[in-house]
Length: 187
Image 1 (cartoon, helix red, strand yellow):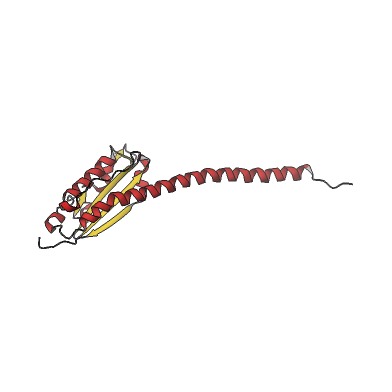
Image 2 (cartoon, rainbow, N blue to C red):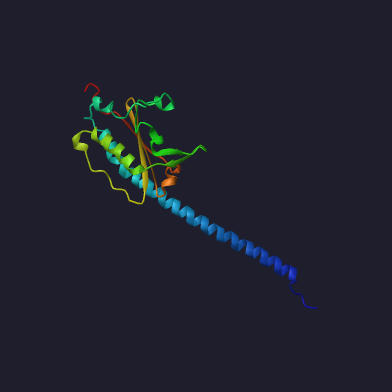
């Protein structure tokens, strides 16, 4: 009598192999998605550095007068949690970038977040002394980004987000820079 594999053993081996191949196929798609997200995260970090760098440099200037510093930001209009801040641009903070859609509580990015962020960037830059004035950095046209500036006394916080997909902008990592007033408080 010769020893051989039975049909049950062959089918069981094929089932195990097929399961392994299907799991590996699933991991490939997960790997591609994670790779794409990693590329976007690195690009967003680079854009944040490029976008926030000139603002941080200008706001750190020792010749920035206190009178200009305290004008940075709008006082929030409502008496909710945002009123903790002494100044915010845009005045609604992150809510300036979203709008409620229907009564189900879902939010969507409204308009062009780039133009809102560039408006904030320009307003902050206009308060910075002229030697630190510079051109707005260019960010790839296929990215959407948002910027919020918050002033609390002698500290300004700049928060930035970027995403290739507009609808995913508010779920992206947040890049924050804080700047403490370095100028002469008597001016």
